[in-house]
Amino acid sequence: MINGDKQLEATLKNELTKELTGNILPFWLNNAIDHVRGGFLGEIDFQGNPVPDVNKGAILNARILWTFSASFNAFEDPAYLEAAHRAYDYFMEYFTDKSYGGVFWELDFEGRPVNTKKQIYAQAFAIYGLSEYFRATGRDEALNQAVALYGDIENHSFDRERNGYFEAFSRDWGHADDLRLSEKDQNERKTMNTHLHILEAYTNFYRVWRDDSLKQRMLNLVELFVGRFINTDGHLDLFFDDDWNLRSDLVSFGHDIECSWLVQEAAEVAGDPGYIEKCRKLAVFIAEQSLAGLDSDGGLFYEYFPSEDRWDRDKHWWPQAEAIVGYYNAYRVSGRSDFLERASGSWHFIQKYLVDPVAGEWHWSVDAHGIPNFKGQKAGFWKCPYHNSRACLEIIRR
Image 1 (cartoon, helix red, strand yellow):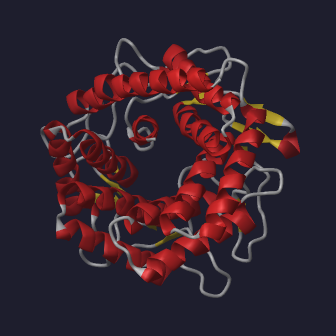
Image 2: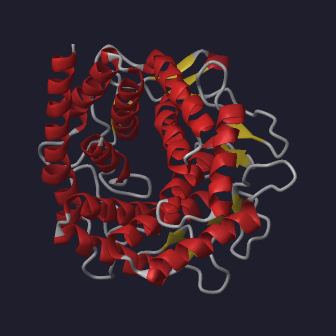
């Protein structure tokens, strides 16, 4: 199957290059720029129409910053660099808290803070975007801001007694009652999701800032995933209290497959041989176990609730993007052609059901019958160009 694998890899690379440069990035360049108030619009509806006067979220804007910085680093297209500059300038001017440090969670459409909570998830994505922008531009200001945010996370969020990171704080880094990222989440002090994206951010940051303390924090996070978050069944445990008591049995297939390659990547960037070997094996094991959520059409189901024996069989855009990378990574680690076929199958599902040939970009989700969610946004607080752009860039790079 070696020749067949090489042909399939070449096809996947060519088609994802075309998807990124011909559909995803042009959509954001042509539709998402806020020409009136700066930066990027807060929302674009299902049909690709801008929704006026919508609040702007830190996650959307940090992910746009990462996306266009990474795309410039891959292709050196000046249009991508210009978009990265736009995202950076707006983020630094409006999202960074000049009084208490960190970044705000949410602004109104005119750039005024409306939710000043210090969500650690947002601080991590700011580091992720800023470190990639520094790779693209070499601007010391971006690196310095990332270093400051790293200090904020470590000084305020790290649990020195029981390990791990607390979820959220008030503007001045005091107590916060509502710790949730969104209404669907549980209001718990420690979550897998935030830890995963701190690890992701620190990994990218370490590429440009070779600090020993940062490396040790990365390896500590890797150990938390190996020993705490990744269950013996290959799925992730998601919500915990202060003392690491598990508070949920929910299975999130998208997070499972995303974790499989991100934790391995962190071990490799840190350069620790023991963790590299351990995480490579785990990546294959997690990919195998995630197949429980893979439908016959190549799409990955959203969630499973074991205690209720209940499935959410919708197929959201981001787990499909992560499935391409996770299954391809498992193929490269194991040499098993079936994982390459799974990665290709994920892309074929996206092509058939999620890519919007009329309005552009990808639909938010489709149901079990392949019907798009007509209420889903093309851009919004959580609908960003990060998962799908990154999937394309990872396959191109690999």
